[in-house]
Length: 405
Ligand code: HEM
Image (cartoon, rainbow, N blue to C red; front, side, top):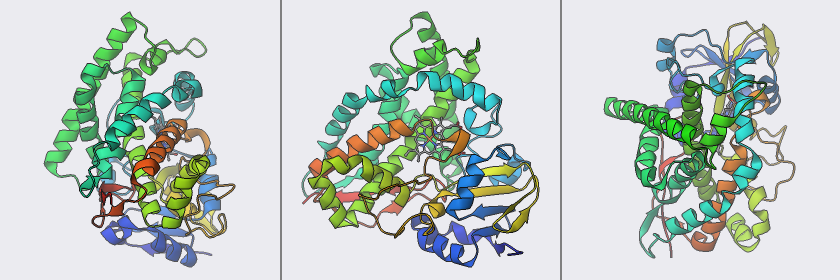
């Protein structure tokens, strides 16, 4: 191959693509596993093999040459562009050695035993939420169930006191608006104010926790030390905000997208309702089948060849996880939802040094959420076509109305 197919990025902004990008990824992969987005000036990598090697290789990183102004004209991968002008440093936007230092410190506090002890909290939260379902009445899975679970869970893990939970949840909902590519000026302003309020609030919470170490993640982050290094006050704020933003909408969409997949594949719903030992495996398949993060971008640090095509140093590329997860070279019957699938090496949590640090928490939340959904809503049906968020990267629904029979 001597040329990548060249596309106008506009075609990927249609709601038809955003709500169900997979048939288009398949068509594109069949034409060429590397495509060039003319007006965005970057490449999409569509095959599993190439996405996997780009994500694992340090010759690709996070320092982009394009300016902020150019990037804000793009609405493709907002997770990376969350707020690049912000002087706060967080690991998602950094390369080693800064990334390594921050990640090692956070990894000290974010350990599996601290995650697993959240199980009873998540279960009782999910049980309370599902009690609001009324027979014969519409219930919005997104605002009534999938949204609150991650928001309250991360607040609890960080150590937000119960008295502040409601305002914390409101700010984190508003801050998540900044991930939406079609936000209005008012919504952008709402997100900015919420982000500021969140930072101020977290800053004062850090001061409180510094005085009395408690049994929570923020206290552990304050205490975390690696080779004599500690997180600065600013890094503590940046890290807490990152955990909140990166873990909220994504996990919400895992629950939403997974439940929609079950409603559309009743045999799989019945199987899961009858055999809960499949829960863990089912969550992996929901992640593969309809991933909450569709792509993640990298800058090319060393001229290279991808899919037979020479790519210059400094070029921007994007590993399209949503396409890699449906690549028939990597998965048998990739377009079939199969909750018993074995050896499911999806890329939904990425790969390499930026592999999602919250993956165990997301898995736990989803496992509990689907257990409760199977107990209560396995006979539900869609009341209306779901409404998708207008965002080609953070893939999820705005509203998802179901009715219990
Ligand atoms: C289903 C839910 C989730 C999905 C699909 C997801 C996906 C991802 C992906 C794809 C990346 C890597 C991006 C890249 O390679 O550039 C990532 C990184 C990250 N995620 Fe998640 N995530 C989820 C839940 C969470 C949760 C619950 C948390 C924490 C509370 C979290 C915290 C992070 C952090 C801190 C990073 C940055 C890691 C680094 O740069 O080293 N995520 N996530």
